[in-house]
Length: 59
Image (cartoon, one colour):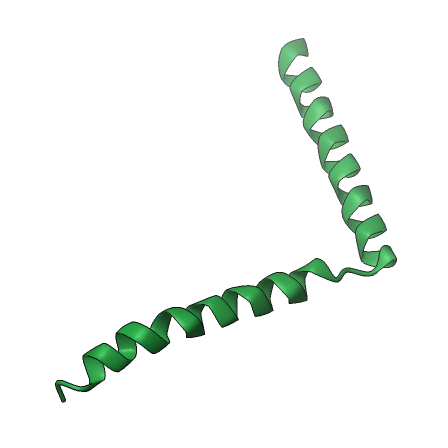
């Protein structure tokens, strides 16, 4: 049981680093279609927020 702690201390950070690199690499690759969809959604959200602000000011 005492041998697990040193092994976990050495191996644990390598596993964590591998998971972080994997997640970074996977999230880095996006298609052009997905990028366009995200940009369109952001524009619509900004427009909706501006319209909501205008409605609150007019009251």
